[in-house]
Amino acid sequence: MLESVYPTPNPDAWESAYLRFETPEQEIRKFAGRLKELGAQGWPRDSRIVELFCGRGSGLLALSRLGFTNIEGVDLSARLIAEYRGPGKVSVRDCRRLTFPDNSRDILIVQGGLHHLPKLPEDLAQTLREAHRVLRAGGLLVAVEPWLTPFLRGTHAIARKSYARRAWPKLDALQIMIENEIETYQQWLRNPKMILDWLAEYFHAEQRNAQWGKLMFVGRKK
Image (cartoon, rainbow, N blue to C red; front, top):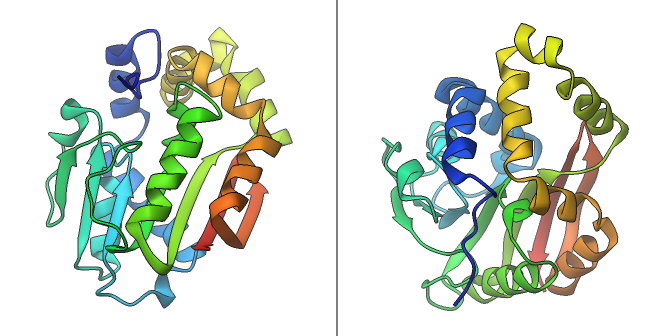
């Protein structure tokens, strides 16, 4: 049986912190801006898009605002899925074991989900294999994940300061999320070469930037 794709040691604490890290509207605007930066303005509006690790569905709402009409989201958390109110389809599924048919989707999007995978490289390889299987020929994988840039190192240092967390509730929520996903989070940040190598195994990179604490990746199915 696959392990749960959940931050540890306390999923409820992580989810509660995530829900107060930013409002849904703030998250939707953030995701819409990212998607534009990653080339969404040039995607056909009828593209068959799935957001993996979709959480409460803010990415789906961002896609809807950008004019996309054929959108779906999957996440392992029934609690977060229940927060979604929008036109897309959502379901509770494990992203390492998708149930979509082969070659059936145009674009898969991940915004901050891969670093929750409990085992590297096994779970990452399995998730990317599934993404590759589900995408049509020439389909896109779009991923945004934490990356250990100087900016992120600085953010970590500040977030550990209790006075900073008291002064800025968003920083407190961030630190709680980090503390409750610390094993998978650190595992992810320690393995940049391995992660990039696995992405390159299945996808031709069309965009790959690491800045402001994020890896921004757009890859076309090989």
